Length: 251
Image (cartoon, rainbow, N blue to C red; front, side, top):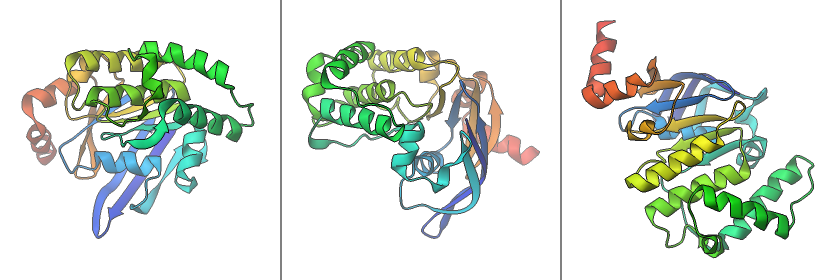
């Protein structure tokens, strides 16, 4: 699916990622945790193709192709999706138009026929139910006036509509109450299968009460320094990142 090797990234004069290695196989859910400034969002932004990052070394292979050579649009069409920590509003563009245009852009890239309005409406109605959103929601401008929970559910709606093979979820759980957290988690669980992979970036283990990750990774100072199973997230919750630093110092 995706293999990241010795990735080094600089922002202005500061090196943020310092030789990061990670491999995510089809069907796997990997969770990346780490303190502020560790490089979690930098990793997500670099993988999605956001500008402003200087890649000074390393390579990223995504389903047999060089991800770093692709435009952000090509990455999306190849099957990569990113859910933002702070989704932006797009005034004047309603959800229906945005999602239909996105679906058809991907279909065109893959030489598939466009979906017509009737078939798309039928499809999107079923997707709305999965994230507990009213049908009138898709007539509203993208993220404009949305609550925090609505924005995050809208991100999951986009994911299950676009059907990516790799979803990068950057702090999707931030700002969610318990009900919204359950809905978002259920949307992820329903979308999981043996071919779809996930990289979930989070500060807290609470979302993991509803998900079953394959691996937990700890990212500190631009590198993955520890990997474990779901219990590692609880250890971090109980002991903090200083515990990992102490372990690193003793090795």
